Structures are given as C-alpha cells and as structure tokens.
Amino acid sequence: MFEARLLKSGQLKKILEAIKELLKEATFDCSDSGIQLQAMDDAHVSLVSMYLKSTGFDKFRCDRNLSMGINLESMVKIMKCCSNDDIMTIKAQDNADTLTIMFETSNQEKMSDYEMKLMNLDQEHLGIPETNYSCVIKMPSTEFARICRDLSQFGESVIIACTKDGVKFSTSGDIGSANVKLSQSASIDKEEEGVSIEMQQAVCLTFACRYLNLFCKAAPLSPQVILSMSGDVPLVVEYQIEELGFIRYYLAPKIEEDD
Amino acid sequence: MAPRGRKPKAKNEQDSTEYEKNRFIILPNALTKDKSTDLQLIKLRHPQTSELAIFVYSEKDKNLAQMRSLPFSHRSFFKGNKLIPIDRIDFVTLVDPLFLFLPYFIKCSSMFSPLDQILVDEHLPELNNLLMKLSELTNLNQVATRKEIGDLILWKYNENSTLEWLTPKIDKVAKVLVTQQINVNQNAAISSSFKLCETSIHSTDEQYKRYAYDIISEYLHSDIQKSLLKHLGLPEIVESNKRKADENRDVNKKVKHNKDEYDEMPHKVEKIVTPKLTAKDKALKKAATGTKSISSFFKKSS
Image (cartoon, rainbow over all chains, first blue to last red; front, side, top):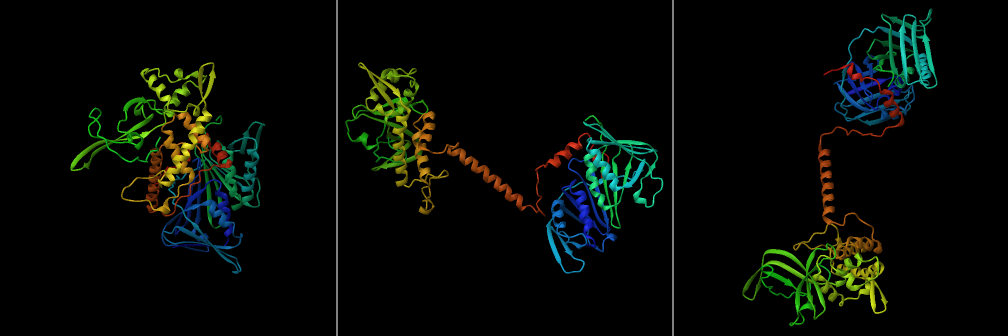
C-alpha cells in the first residue's frame, strides 16, 4: 500500500509542468524515503532526476517499494482538475495497475477522486557519479529563464563561459549575435536574489538552447537555480523545491558548434 | 454453350483406348440424339489461353462442343453385373464457335478484312479450313460489323456488339445460378455431407452476376474480360482468383491468432503507443543533434 498526502497540490502540478515537455512517460519509484524519478528524454540528450522526500509530505506511507509507470500527459490532465491549494492524496495498492488521486478543498467541502491507469515502462536507471564541478553558479531562476528565452531568438545553441569575472551566455545566428554577462552580486539582501559563482577552473561549454528553455519551466518551483559545470561533462540545472526535494536536469554539451 | 455445373443427362460411352484407359464421357443430349452422328474430336485453340484444346465437332448436326477432363481415379461404377473402373471423366458441353473466333477477330480489328483472312492461324495452318467450316455455324454479326463491297464481304471486330452479345449470356447464367441455389460466396465449399442452410444464403445479385461473369470469362481473352466487367457495371476487384482471397484470409487469421496469444500474456497495463511526432518533438529532436548521448556520461546502474 502506498499513500502520500500533500498539502499543496500546486507543487506537484508545477513539477509535472516542469517535466511534461521533456518526458512523455516516466516511472515514479516510491520507497519509504520518498518518491524518485529518473528518465531521459526521447533523444537521450538530457536526463531528469527528481526526488521528493517523504518528510516533505503531510503523510507518507509506503509499505513496499513500488514503481509506477505514468503517462505524464494523463497525469497533467488530472492535475488540472484541482486548484493549487487543494490537499491531494495519492494512493496505490501493491502491484496495482491503477493510481488513485484524490483532491479535497481545505474546508473539506469538496472531495474528488480520479483513477489513472498505470503503464509498464522499461526504463534503465543511470548511475550519476558524485562530481566536483569546476563552476557552480547560483542565480535567480527567473533571470536564467529570461536569458535563455532571449538568447533562443538568436541561435540554437548557447555558449556558457564561466570565468572569474562572471558568467557569459552568448549565441549567434542568422540575425546576429547576442551576449549576456552576469557578474557576481556585490551586496545582496537575500541569497536567492543575487548571482554567486564558485569557481575552481574556467569552463566554456555549448548547449542546445531549446533544452535549456524546457528546463526553465521549473522556475516556478524555486526562486533560485543552480548551474554546475565542468569541462566535457553534462551541465546540471538544479531547482530546490522548498521542504520537498529537488529537480535536476542534466544536459550533455554540444560537441561541435558547426553541426 | 451449356453453363458449368449443369450436367446434361448422362449417357455413358466407353471411349476407345486411343486416349486413355477407362474414360467416362458425359455427353449432352444434343450430341446423342442421333445414333448415326458423326462426332469427331478436333483440336482448336482455346479462346482464353490460346493453347490447343480438344473439342467435339459434329459436321452433320452443326454442333461444336468442348471437352473438359477431370482426373477421377480410384472410382468405378456398375454396369449390370460388371464393374467398370474410371480414371477420368470428360464433360462435353456445347460451345458457341464465336468464342473461338473472338481472338482471331481481335487480332485483325484494325481494318475490314475478308473472313478467310481473319480466321487464319499463323502457326497451325491446318486449322484454317476447320475454322472456315465452323464459321458457317454462327452469326458473325454478333461480334463483328459486316461490309459488302461488290461481291466481297468484309468483317471487322466490333467490341460494342460483342459486349451486347455477352451480356444476356451472363444474365442467363446468373439466373441458373439463382434457380439452382448455387452458393456463389467467395469462400464457398462443396460438400456432399452438409447442405447449406437456406437462411444462410444471402448472396446479392451482384455476387451472382460476378460468378456468372467468372464462368463466361473462362472463354474470353483478358482484354474483353476487362471491358465486359466495365460494361456490366461491376466494380473491379483485384482478386478474381479465389485462391488468392483465401490466402489473405489465412493471413488475417494468423494475425488474429497471434493477437489472442498476445492478450493472454500477463500484462499489467498495455503500453499506450503514441507514435505521432508533434512539431515540438521534431524541433527538440533537431535541437538534440550534435549533442552526445547523456548515457555516455552516466553508467547504467544495475
């Protein structure tokens, strides 16, 4: 028996919005420590890793480890049936082929439940090694989204160059080129509003802009985004979900610009 | 011409051993009325295949009949107290010689020609005389246009009148099929032990017509077959061959069977296949080009 109660269903709604365009279907692995999801997109270029810890839920019960193959599009449809501050409960029996999602309004006056068919998905789990990244950039998630959006008008790939002066996003295309440079904030009132760069070694990598834009769909989940880079390894774009867990996107760098 | 399947009253005649031992020949009444008839076996080109086939010709009765042979081994019948084995049954049915002439007429359809120049077999000139003789039995106006120039009579093939001549034949055959309750369904089977329940016969007029057409077409060249089909207003079906249709049927059965097996597998939930690619998917795919696969960075965990 698996049961998880979340006080703010809006959080799961946002999570699904953040991954539904990269993944069509995914396996949610439930254990007593929480819910985990790891999946690659169809092109096998990016990887989504999500972890929702059990303590982040209002109530969490998982007697046996359970893998639920979920069609994300269907789940999004169900999540559209609730408002953001509804209380939601997810339930599934051991070895069940359906998942029950229940919503209740905070005043308990309206209850609704939805049942969704599960799928059998064969997905391979990738082991992600612990890496000490050469550069770790923390910046406001809205700022990152803005930069990705702006630069995607110019070119298909973005070069992210991190030096001790700051981080530079640049691209070029048919109409010309674009450069955005961010320097470390001098004084900040709140940590998540500023830009901070921890750097051991300068890094310059190229990434597909469209993917970065999809990662930015997770911006509503967290005010801050953490970009971690090292030479010739995938970029990590991490969003911390307050009290609940995190969602990380890994994106392999482009090998050659002239493709 | 007698339609296939309608057996004239049987009268047996033991054939000479010239052809094959123990042949059992079924002759139509028209050929046996007169004991002194001068039946002779002749070889002519079959109108559909233009291969040589055996026909029975009676000059006196002005009859031409076709012989269809059916191997029929390990059978026998009683004649009085005598047991007579049968190796082969020959059905003899009357044929309108016009059918045999059609290929010759079509060959010379480009211009008006005298008959003795139309009914000419290039490879077997010995047939020419015979063909001319046979032409006296028929009304050539049914398939050709006649023209008289001086004392010369010229003929030219006329497709329209041929089709007009063939259509009533098909209607006639179809009528017989209906009255004899012959099952014209494509997957019809012949069984001596089971009779088709009447309620299960629900062949349409079109099916009867098509079946009749199939019978008549056995005497027609493929070109005429096509125009006849059009003339009758029957939709063209690629399979005029029953066996082909049966093969398809088998394939379908197989697929169905496999599907059943598949369903029996202990599937939790069937995976919903969504093969369609939206413009977004395509754009994403394009964006992914030039990028290494992420699985080359992360090892698979067991």
